[in-house]
Length: 391
Image 1 (cartoon, helix red, strand yellow):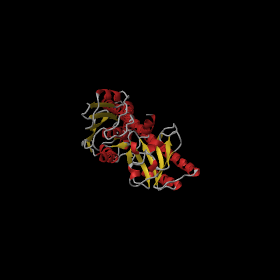
Image 2 (image 1 turned 90 degrees about the horizontal axis):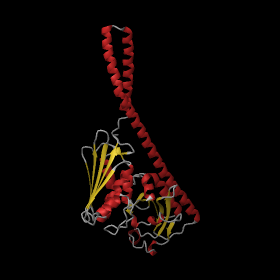
Image 3 (image 1 turned 135 degrees about the vertical axis):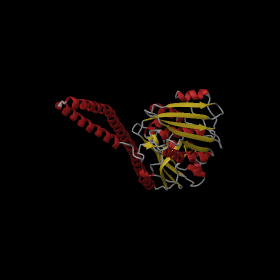
Image 4 (image 1 turned 30 degrees about the vertical axis):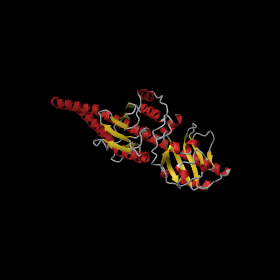
């Protein structure tokens, strides 16, 4: 669970790193002398290939991967000298069929706290032997991958803090406009009364207050105008249209693989309003993967996304509904209390017990709510509500 939470803290969009690590994947293949090099990150359900060299692949189920053993090894590497001779892998599609892989060498991508986010792996159609010198070079490359992931997280965190600072500045500017407007109005009234009384000194003083007050009011208006959101989304923002597109790209392959009808609907009236994308792919992705895991062939998984506009803050609502095997009330209670245990899926998918626990953890941290409506044999509906500041 700690490993999964550590990965979620990076808040990664698995579709956006192909160019960031292309040079390192190519270098790893050259060093190892293999045709293929992949940089994989592994969550509760899926192995995501964020950069590939020599093999076009984006994702596979976690239980089908070799790298799942790499992230669990107590050693600094995991090697399979002949995949065809190994009972665990000989029947996997990438061994039994094209590209008929034989050799695997993986190095875990470990954080400073010792959690393996995924693996740098080298594969080939021929049997290989790596010298100690090559292995040391590959470890350096793996360390650089983790360094770049850490840099990405740091930059994302700085952008979030900058956004929060801008929000504070806007709030201060907004808060001073009211009092200043009142001062100016009062000064105007006193000024008008002063004309009747012909108090020259008081009038001059009041005029100075008016001019100063108007200058401050113009400054506040300038700050508010300068910080208005632009039409283009910032790096840390989604709107419903972009959010839907990301989810379709990431999870449609899983639906096709299991012959599940997968649909995503969005509310039209708030489709272009920006909101923070913080942890949204991790939360929604785990719910979708879980729904597909427990939905049989020819079933359906539906996602409804909406942004409810409110006076003080907006509310992002995520509903994931499936036609799967459903949950007992005891299972629902276990999930909501963070004590859910793993079970295997309808297609024999291996369970790890972390997906829904992670969702609950992330939703709680974002001050959101999670509700589950289900009965055994009648599918399930997960409803998530997350408060969003008005950007």
